[in-house]
Length: 253
Image (tube, rainbow, N blue to C red; front, top):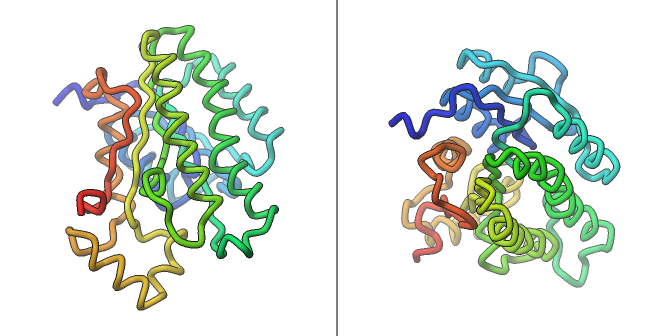
């Protein structure tokens, strides 16, 4: 079981303030990592994720960054790449969603979703990944989606971005595996978070979704915790360029 231990590692988790990001940060701390949490609205002190990490006996640092702002993302990448203590684990989890039929999906919504969910992910990973490549080690984990595999309904921008994350995961793995940097992604299924509140509130859509999930329930953010620790650990040393579904069996249906 020592292969799953990430003691002494420094993990950056974006979108860490709540939901999946908070659960991943907590799990990594419980497995031994210190955490830098990043979010646009993360409290400087006293946040829930900070309390989680400190309760696990690890250190926590809060960083605010708006992933909708390309300049802010570049500054964040430079800040983290230049740290004396290097980043060992990068969890690219920050994201947003806009729901509208394609004919009503505005340019502004399209551009926002692509910026936050894809462009910012690449810019941050390029900065931190370059330092990992130079050191010859590192773990990068993207949050992909079922919609990295499927088309979804009324979320064209989100689907395009998550397909992009799937391709980016493979492309970076192809380049960086030889340097000892593992690049992988987790593809959550239907998880009970703010992003899926509208679906859960729609009795027709919610029933249709639940009827297809073999596990018979919506996932929780904590269902992603084990996958995050696994991909961040030495137990996944020979895993490169994969999208790991955590979906209650949805894709196998």
